[in-house]
Length: 373
Image 1 (cartoon, helix red, strand yellow):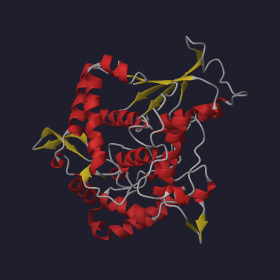
Image 2 (tube, helix red, strand yellow; image 1 turned 90 degrees about the vertical axis):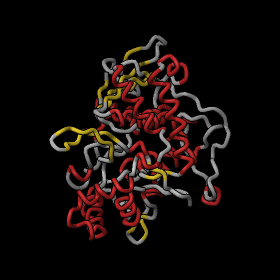
Image 3 (cartoon, helix red, strand yellow; image 1 turned 90 degrees about the horizontal axis):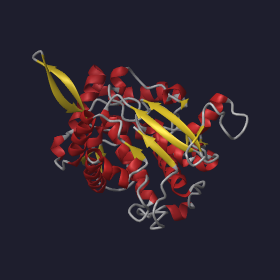
């Protein structure tokens, strides 16, 4: 087995104290990795094939690779690895995912399901924008919220009927979950399905987190934000994040606004439960206890294979972290879909009111891999 921990390769350090990046992580603090490439570097493979002690032959005589992800938080490493399989010899990859909270597991199921949506249901551009919204925004567009409610209904059936899940999403294996954990996942998905915006008042919860974190600096939070960005994130290599987008996220929790639309529906996937003490007694509460200091731009927005995206003009990045994130997610989903490198359209073709490059080009093929949780 090749056992890889995503945190070992972390390229970023979270900004601020533990209070700043919270007790519940919703996105990783390192860019997405192709784990096959990483495993090759670790073991210094002399050929395109891994050593025998790392690979086994499956029943189909195809080399099999097992990867354990502990606390990887989101599905970025899984999706990046699957999207890059066309660069490597054929292998059957099994991912084993271990998280310390079920909300993170639920979000990974959401991202994997979204990535595998057939093109006739959701085009590439819409899929990429929806992915970033659900990953890093406190507020969603109404159509994204409707999609989340639809998937929540489906996920409830997945966790309560394993035969149904194996029929409709055989790349996923939920059999190792305990009955109690499946019940808790069902409760999470029922909460996602709840259309009442008052069920998760994220604007108020975000502001409370900010006030707790900043204390007496709250009224001068713009200056504190500038200091954190320049002296911490920029110093650790995330220079493409500009002040405007970083301050908007720090102030509102909305990191990605790709369209001229209204973002006003709470993103219930960012809710988690905790036991709080009230008059000496533990009381269950649901709130936002995630990152308010580092930002979700780290995951897809600070690195790029295309050097044009990282160019600077007069010492300043020509592209924002949001633009780089959208490009990287689009490229990842395209490669996952077509098993070939993404070649973006020319600017005159790529701009406009929400056209989709994939259009209705057919059903999305399932990657040749299995997932175990």
